[in-house]
Amino acid sequence: MPDDAAPIHYRVRLQDAAAHLLAVRMRVGRPDPQGQRLTLPTWIPGSYLIREFARHIVRIRASCRSRPVALSRVSKDTWQAAPCDGPLRLDYLVYAWDFSVRGAHADQSHVFFNGTSIFLAAQGQQHLRCTVRLDKPRGVFARRWRVATTLPADGAAEWAFGDYQAGDYDELIDHPVEMGDFRFATFQAGGCEHAVVLSSAPDADLDRIVRDLAPVCQAQIDLFESETRRAPVRRYLFLTQASESGYGGLEHRASTALICARHDLPHRGMTGIPERYRGFLGLASHEYFHTWNVKRIKPAAFVPYDLARESYTRLLWVFEGFTSYYDDLMLVRSGVIAMADYLQALAQTISNVLRGAGRFEQSVGDSSFDAWTRFYRQDENAPNAIVSYYAKGALIALSLDLTIRLRSNHRRSLDDVMRLMWARYGRAFEREPHGLPEEVMPALVYEATGVDVSRDLARWVDGTADLPLAELLASFGVILALEPQHEGPTWLGVRTTVRDGDLALTQVLHEGPAHRGGLSAHDLLVAIDGYRIRSESALNAVLARRQPGDRLAVQVFRADQLLDFEVSLDSPPHTKAKLTLTPLRERRLERRTPIRPRRPNRRRSGDGNRR
Ligand code: ZN
Image 1 (tube, protein in one colour):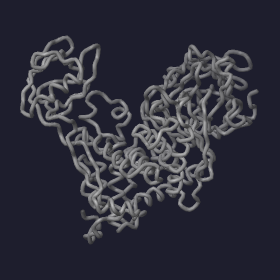
Image 2 (cartoon, protein in one colour; image 1 turned 30 degrees about the vertical axis):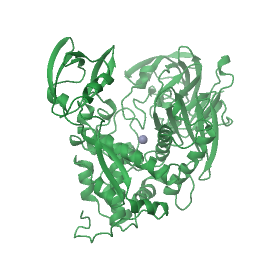
Image 3 (spheres, helix red, strand yellow; image 1 turned 45 degrees about the vertical axis):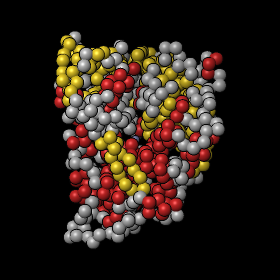
Image 4 (cartoon, rainbow, N blue to C red; image 1 turned 180 degrees about the horizontal axis):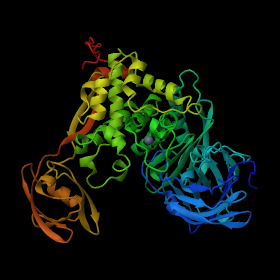
C-alpha cells in the first residue's frame, strides 16, 4: 500500500525484463492547484554531461481518483499535469538499458538504477519526504533476488524488497539500487558497517576484497576524523558490477556504483596485488574518498544542484584531482600496496599528463569549467586541446602536498588542508549547506598550514606550464626520470585502431611526425613505402626498422580520396615517467622513518614562498 502519510510516493516494478522496461507509479499527495509540473534531471551529480534522462520515458499517464488527467510537455525534461482535485497519480515506463554506473539497466539478470533515471520530481515539492516501494519481480529468474541500496528502510528488512524512504528528492536520487542475485561480504570501519556487493563475478575472492578495502576505508576515516575515527555514514555499500571489460565508478553519499572487468578482481589462491587489481582497489578508494570530497565538501556551484542545466565550477581539480591523488596514496598508506607499486601508479599519472600537448593549451581551471563540453565529450583532437583535471589535478595535489611539507619543515601537509575543508564546508553540510567558494583555495591552504601557495596555485591551476615535479620529488628522495614513450628508434605520433580491416588513425598528436607530414585523424592508412599496412604490429615493425630522420612515403584514404604524404621520422619523445627512490631514501623506508625533506627547509624570502 502507498504510504499516505508521505507527500510523495513511488512504486518501482520490473515490467518487462526482455524489453528492459521499469514501471514506475508515482503519487503526489498534494499537487500544485495550478497544475503540477514534473521533471526528470538532465544530468547525474558526479558525471558532468547533459544526458537528458527523460528521453527514456516511453509512456506516461496521469490520473486523479481513477480519472485521467491531461498531461502536456513543457520541455525535454518537464511535463505539466492539468489541475486536479485530489492526489495526482502518474504511471510511466522507463526504458532501462544503459550498462553504466550513470543510468538504469534492467533484464533477467538484474536491475540497477539511479534515481535520476527513474524518479520524476514534483516541482516545488523536492524538499518533501518520499517513500519508495520496490516490488520483487514475479519471473522465475528473480527467485533468489535481493536488494542492495543505502536508501533508508521504511519497513523493508536489510537486503530485502519492500518499503524505503528519503528525506527529500536530493537524498532520493543519491542512493542507487541494485536488485539481483548478487553476493556480498561485510566489514567494519569507523564504527560503520560496509559491504562489498558483487554481481556477475562468481569466481572472485570476495573475502580478499573485503580484507584489502577495510584498512583503506579506515585510513580515510582516520584522515578526516582524526579525533573520533568514526565514519560520516551509518552504512556504506560498494555496489560492484563485473563485466568482460569496463572500468568506472560514480560516488554517492553512502555508496558507490562500480563497474570493473571480471579479471581485475582477485581469485582464490591469488597472491600479491597484480596491477589490474590495484586499479580496482584504486577505483574503490577513489569513490570512497568522495564520501567527503564532493559528496559533502562541495563546490558552491553545486549547492544546491541545478539538475536542469550545467553547473559550472573551476574547482574540479580539487574535487576530482585531490581525490585522484589520495586514492592510490591511501592504498600505500594503509599498507595494502608496497611503495614500489605506489610509485609505479604515480609514474603512470605523470606519463598520462605529459603525453598530451593539450596541457599547454588548457589550464585545469578551464578544464574543470568546460568539463561538460570537453572532458566529457572528447573527440579525436582531445590530446591536443585539453588536459585532464583528474590527472593534472592529482599532480597539483602532489605538488601542493610536497610544497607544504617542505615549507612547513614537515609540520603540515595536504591532510591539514583536507581536514580544514571538512571542518568548514563538509561536516555540517547537512545542517548548514554551503559550498567551497571558487577562489578560496589559497587562503584555505594558508589557514590550514601557514604556507602561502597563492603564487604557485595561480601558476599551476590557471597556467599551462609543467609542474615542478622533478625538483619537488627530489627533495623527498624520489628521482623522476623521463624515458622514451615507445620502445624502438622512431615513432609516428599517432594512435590507431583497426576499422573494417584497415588501420585508421584515431588521433594525430600535435608536432609529431605524422602531424608535420600532413596526416589527419580518421585517415585510413593504406601503404608505407609502397607496401600495405593493415595492423598496428605491421606499422610498429616498419618503425622499428627505421632511424630518426628517415622519410616515409605514406598513402592514406581520407574519406574516399587517396592521398600521398611524406613523413620525416623522429625518435619517440621522453614522456614515460619512472620514479625511483634514492638509496638513502630506500634505507630510511626500510627503517620505516617518516618521509622528511632531504634538505633542511630553505630560509623564507619576503613573500614566504620562494622556490
Ligand atoms: Zn571521482
